[in-house]
Length: 316
Image 1 (tube, rainbow, N blue to C red):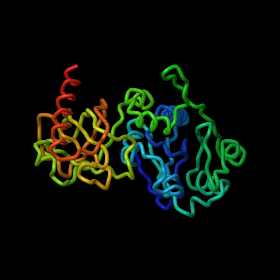
Image 2 (image 1 turned 90 degrees about the horizontal axis):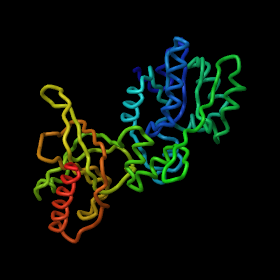
Image 3 (image 1 turned 30 degrees about the horizontal axis):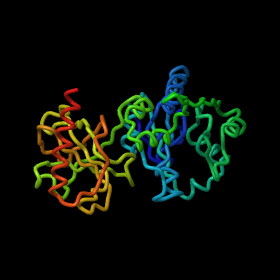
C-alpha cells in the first residue's frame, strides 16, 4: 500500500482513483462498509482505491486536551487500512490553511486538480471544509462532470435491546464501560493498542512483576484499568511472530503518583527482552478498575490477585 504524506508529494499527473475521505478512527464496521465500496468500485473501474485522512485529528486541533480519546494512532489505522486492501493512503496535515479552506476550494484544488477523483464514497453524515459547510449534496453538485459520488448509509447494530448507529463515539462508549464484547462487535476484531517498549521506572521488576512499558503516542487511552491481554511481537533473532498472555494496567498509576497515561504489561510465564520492540496488545477481559493503594506492598498483593484471576480466565 502506498503512503502519501501531504499534497506536495502527489504526482501532478496522478492516476485517477476511487476515494473516500474521513478520520476513520478505529476503522470500525461503519468505516469498513465505506472502504469495501471503494475497493469494489475501484476494481470494477480498474482504478486505484484511496483513503484520504487528516492528521492530527481535527477535533484535537479544535478541542485540544478536551478532544475525544483516540481509538487508534496513525500507524494502527494504517495497518487496518492495509489489511482491508486499500491501494494508497493520502495523509493531509490538518493545519490552519486546511481548517480555513472553503469546501468548494477543497473540492476544486484537492479532489479534482490534485487527486483527479473519478468516484467518491462518503458516509451519509460526512461534512468538510470551513465551518463544516461541505456535505454530500455539495460534493455532488460542485463536482458534477468531474467525478461521481455516492453516500453510504449508517450501519446500525442492536445491543441490549436497543439499536445504535455505529460510530467512533459508540466504540469509545463501549470501551469506557469496559464492554469489550460490544467493542469487538463494532470493530469486528478485539480492541488493541500497540507501541514500542521503552524503559520505565523498573518498579514492577523490583516487586517481582516485571512489566513492558508500552509507549502509547496518544493524549489518553480509550480505556482505563487492569485487563487480561494477549501480547504479540516479532522475535529479534528470526523475525518469527510470538505471543503470550499477560496482565496489563492502562492508566496513570496513582499509587506511584504517575503523571502520564501508560500501558504496562506483565507477561505470564516469560520475561523476554522487549526493549525497542513494537508490542501489540489485544484486550480480552476487564479485571478491575485502576485505584490508588496506600502502599506499594498493598499494590503488590493486588497484582498477585490480578495474575491469579487472569490465569483462571485463561483456563476457562
